[in-house]
Image (cartoon, rainbow, N blue to C red; front, side, top):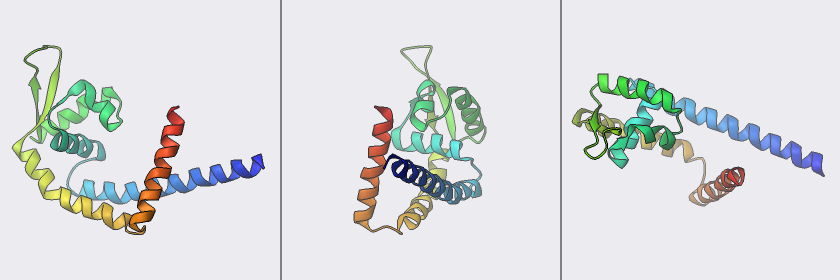
Length: 145
């Protein structure tokens, strides 16, 4: 019985990994067509939807090593999609703030990005999507505990 459980777990891991890679390949290609890498897009999308963010906290919110954030922010700043803003209350804190050019960029590409993801997920019914969300969350929470 234990060997069967291990085999099913391995198969599930492989299926999830392959699905993740296939989805990311499609989404990342779309992002690249707009001149960004996935990390740059994640930072810009975070700022667009959540507002100004302390540079020190961006990495944790988009699952990126903090050492890489400076590089990504530099690249986005060169493209004039964001600016750094010093915190008025704490000189040790610097915020990343999306610019009007950055907002216009995201607003121009995000609807197509959302549609592409919806097209990918359309293989599932709404009920299957809910079931998948709950099951994948269950795995994620199980790992954390």
